[in-house]
Image 1: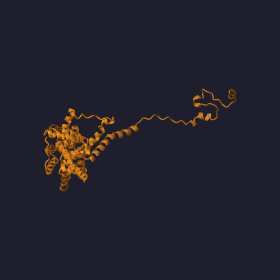
Image 2: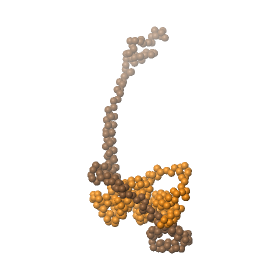
Image 3: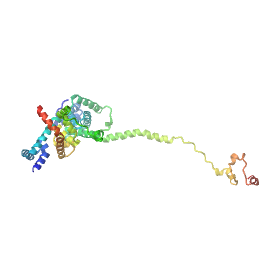
Image 4: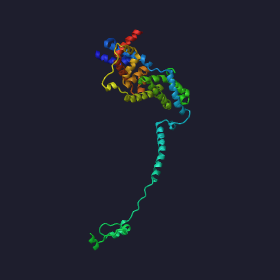
Length: 176
Length: 201
């Protein structure tokens, strides 16, 4: 029973100290504190912490007026363009995320458009190396005459006057 | 700039309306009413002056640009501003969690605290604000938020739940848990602290 009282007090003590409990619970806690030494000690401990927090926390980081004035100046300078109708920033299309997204998409499109056009024209204007003319080897006179010759042959047009062709003649066979 | 407590809700709504109609004085008045308490909130959560300043500026900038979105029927302006600031504070300590590394933990040694009888230790023990600041730093962010909003800003559980974006019961249990954790961490020093304070007064 004592353990139950102690636990009950422990759970509700913070609210008891700040006056946030219903009358019934409040009266019950008060009775436990009177009856049980453990509950009383818990009450003293938690009251001590509450007092410390209430005394010290509101004074935490109390700013001086100079600091707040400086922040106000910065705020004014940041808010000024929008309120005085100066140069519109991204807020020109509205301060909603939708408006900002639209602004970014438009900006990206504007930036990428010249690149896209430039890429297309550059692809069409590239100087390709001249294509070699195809020669129909089978229709040249050399290939026609070589068909009946034996051994190493060359085209008649370029070498016929310089190197005699080895024909399937008795002289040729003698030379071999 | 003084820490003027905000007036009634109707009065604040009127100032908001004036600001929305283009009255620059309205903005200044809102800033004057809430800047100090909002700064204290940010500082208590972040324990860093520069960060607190940055968050204060960001929060007001966002709030003033989105003032048309504020619905006085849903929440008070104070709660709305606090929600904005707390959300930004959360982003900041989430970002800093990855940057702040305790090297002593890496190498498996602990930095020794000054001995109890050293003069530095005596100074630390007497300085209540510093002790609580240390204890608060040891709390998890959610518990710290609950404690700071409750004891530092004097908010009701309902307001805390609105600012923290959780059910009221959760806010209550966070305050209770935070209270218990603080008691555990402050107990060795806290009792001495209380005795010192009692001696002085």
